[in-house]
Length: 83
Image (tube, rainbow, N blue to C red; front, top):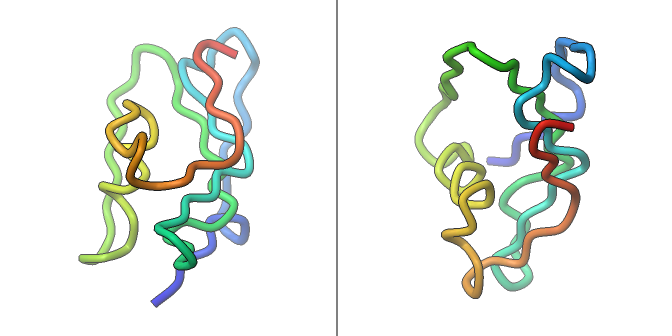
């Protein structure tokens, strides 16, 4: 099952309110694409949760943020910390 975050609603925040942002994040395991065009914004001083079905890419997405996928998965796109 494939998920495309591009078609989802994204709350637009002011630059000074963003803690973390991903732009066009694509993650590949070899030829298999696990995440498609991930565009998310996380607001400062807020608790955020990722909720989804098993296999929907939650762990893959989080591992790309903390670089646990380095050397295992090919991550393309931008991850911006505080803008």
